Amino acid sequence: MFFAALSLRDVLQVPSVPVSMNLPNFLSYLLPPVLSYFGVAGLVVMQRTKCLRVALWPLVAILALRATLSFDFSLGNPEGVFQNMYLVSLMFFITTRTLDWTLATEPLQRYIRPVNSTPSVTADALDLAVNLRGYGWNWSKGLRVPQETRPLARTRFIGRAILSAGLHALISAILGTAVRSFSPNTFGSMRGGTIFDETLPFFVRYLRSVIITTISMSMAYCSVQVMYDLYTVPAVLILRQDPAQWPPAFDAPWMATSVNDFWARRWHQLFRRTFLFLAGDPLSRMFGSTGRIIGGFLASGVFHDVMAVPFGDRVEPWHMILGFGAMGIGAVGERTFLQWTGRRVEGLVGWVWTMTWVILCSGLIIDGWARAGLLGSQSVIEGVVPLRALVERSVMVFDAWLHTF
Image (cartoon, rainbow, N blue to C red; front, side):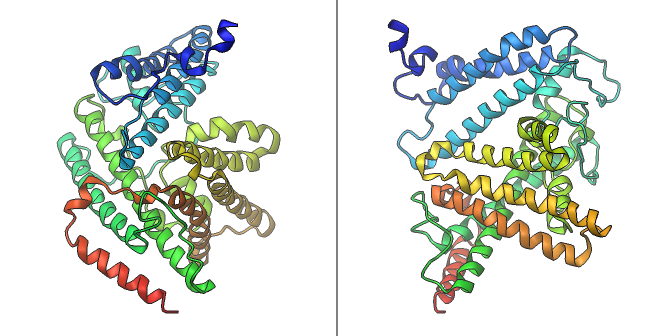
């Protein structure tokens, strides 16, 4: 009777009221899942540790859930919900990546190391834990990375990464200002709202949504690039990793000439292995390569839905699942076209097809985020963006012109 009366929060020893971040709370709630994550990374590079990993993983999952339920970075400020979103994303990947490593039948092998370095379990575990794509490991088979164009001398490489982070942060802030200026009182605010304005004629309504979607996708591209650059700098500067271990995150996705080219090569592959592990590989055992593609995209849809959990019931899961699922259908369709005709989707026609399909499918995803209020948050840098007032005024004038039709 006593155990039946306990709630999940009681069992996990979660505080009755979510706490903010400070040193005691960090040590009590956030550090344990992070340390357990590094612990599993260490075990998976050693021989004969699978039983220990299997025994440890439930604890990792419990600690990650406990951290997720314990913190609330918003503290009554709607803008702070985004910090909760980052926490949920981190705990999601700690849980899923350690599960992947737990089920590995053989120790993971590293085949790219810094020049003149000595193989070490500690160094390998640290590299595996902070290596987003699994680059240089047999853990992430089939991974494609863009060709490196930056100087590999450590100082110059770090300088380029810092410059890239600053530039993309500025562009992201400008694009964010532009998106919110289309509708400051709905999806341009934390209240949220749809990007499809029912007061406009059909063609103008969808033209406007395509413009908003394109700007939002560009903002997402810049935001991920900033994150990757800021992740790269301490890895190379403090952890002394080789710059060659940090190839570019993107390969000019706007140049893609097929949906497969866009998602499998040109868009970032940071979470590729996790999505394939969760759904791509299981479905491939039943439906072959088609199941692998669709499964990977569906897992991505689930992840993007989980990211938005802190925003509550304003998030409608079907936006993410349908949007990413449709991307997978487009990729499978291209393979079917190749089988039937012997010709690949490529060239100018392929580019037009790719941009059309990706933007249309992304419209569902962006609309889901907009309804939840995800587009309404302003970054710190936006307050000092040059020409911010000009951007706002120009977009508002353009949007007012669209509403004259």
